[in-house]
Length: 537
Image (cartoon, rainbow, N blue to C red; front, side, top):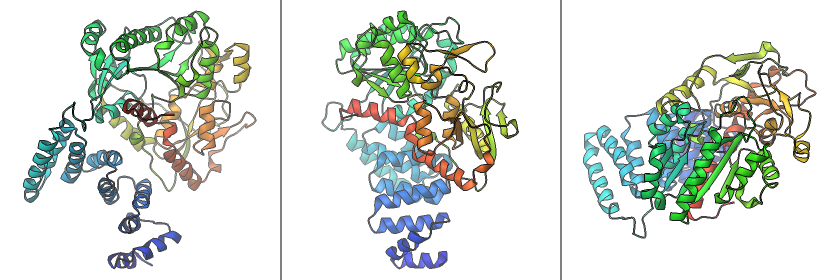
């Protein structure tokens, strides 16, 4: 049966017959995906139609017809949050299509976000045909006039929420824009060493965050402490382990500032949340600093960790200096890309090179140099001075490396560890492992607790990571979900050519289907649920 026959059945309203055809024949073109999806939709199966269109966009990224139909169905079904995600993508593809600005404006008006809706309404009017212009003016006037009656004290109002971020977040700070897109106000405190991370602060400012200089914190809290909903800090804690950072204590300064601000805010607003997140570059080996941390940690409502191993490591060490409520401890990754910034394209054939980024390979890895492609240029992906640079960097990386099959994870410490994770915890010893850097060693426990940034980059673009098949629970999560290739210690040689293009495509699909493992959205949803008073786990 060819496409003309399918169109004829569809036009005759034989939607069940169209669906039956595709139950045994997978859609191969955008037109076929649309016919199957719209047949489901016309029979009232909204969920199924959305799934078909989303699958179509995986196969044919940025296809205008698939994108348009998906947005229309999500909007008609009042699935506004999902619709907005695809609207942002559609606006990038067709920046002069008034329909997308109109739908976005209407959704925001309906949600009571008039200030955010108006710029989209203005864009819709700018690009609308003359015969539609007056209709839109009438609609927006009515919506704005009606909805502007909502006041912060009315029953229907959605209170504007506010977050104080202490420090800049090292990786993917632009993901915090998701909060601002949903009406949050984000205030960022420049801590003592802010100039060393100036580009991150500039990036946050470029997405709409408001900066608070160190000497302005007191006056800000005098006027705003009672209105803050969340005080948050994410980053590392070396805790006396100098690693390769020498004797810098910027982590201590940030966390100290976070504790003091949290205490001040909670005195003014008992419902305010204090959340501290540790990334994988965190060590709890020094009893002096653990004691310092333990005396202050009670102010936290939640403490987040990149991995379960890191959480267990923290609990093991801190329990020696203070009691800790285990319910406060959550595995929730923060410094990650937004799901909507994941850029995975399917290819019929992949370049079966194993990409490596940002670190020379001086020690043994189970991959021949014949298969390794070292990325030498600097491309802004997870950090940069403004959002435009980040967007450009991601597009550049996709065009240059998007078809690479594999990416090399960290192996430089994998074969040299003296103890397993449980043994390290039991002995109270972090152990030391020579790294492939010339001048330093690092604690072996780091290999078990860290989420490597380069692996996140690979996942963001659908490049399948080749990683140690070890006790790192992040590694295990990727391997168990078919998102990465785990290499065990007895593997002497990894040959990328043993994986077919079809197998690589399947692993890419697994990566896109398990985005919650490596994206910011789980953190965002958790905080939203807390501040909305919904139950969380």
